[in-house]
Length: 277
Image (tube, rainbow, N blue to C red; front, side):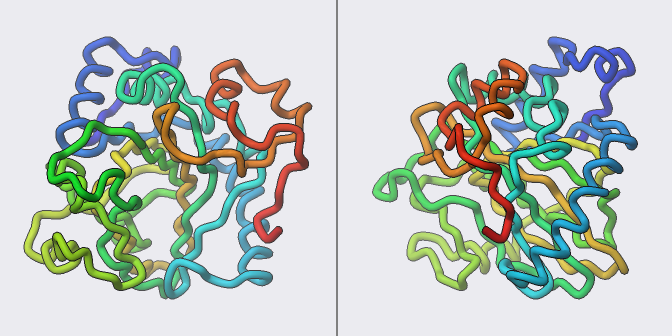
């Protein structure tokens, strides 16, 4: 579901109470919510100006790593990537806090970029079972936040999702099938062929929040340019390893309080790590 924020919500960066309730309902029942065009065009251009040469160097050094002409790249914890509107946007954190509760934290700070010529990924969810012996759905314990740096269209490799319940499958149905493996409890790739899906089309600077268990896949980029999403994962305080995002002490000290809380379990006091290191 796409929510177009009011001018007042965009200016104040505060969701109306009913909008917040609707957003939380959608994530819990449908698996995701999309807030259209939250970050300004100017801010997105600034981020992309820094991102593109960094990504080019990463590909030159490391190559593609998530399929044909497709790459995941961890982001260095530095400006402009750690702009407050990216790492602790009040509109996003209101939804995250309501679902994951106080004490949630960010344990993943990266990007996904299908380049021209990229192909389909296998349908997959981003996580293996938390309790693989259980055949009951569990409450949400992880949320993925995506912010596109370009308008996402039918042509440039939009994310395809299977909303409306795939995140609520029994825990044993969670499975990362990108490597071609088949979950013995449920053949996710085969099942998805016969299920309703949709492509997430949106403006640059939008914010998508989805249950990490939701089935999805990358689609081919048929355009002439890259299609980059910034990506973060927020977890309940008790879940996930953390302690790998390197954050210089001075950088951490200057973060807004909300960001300090979100990244409190990472490697604070270490130099920002470049993607190829």
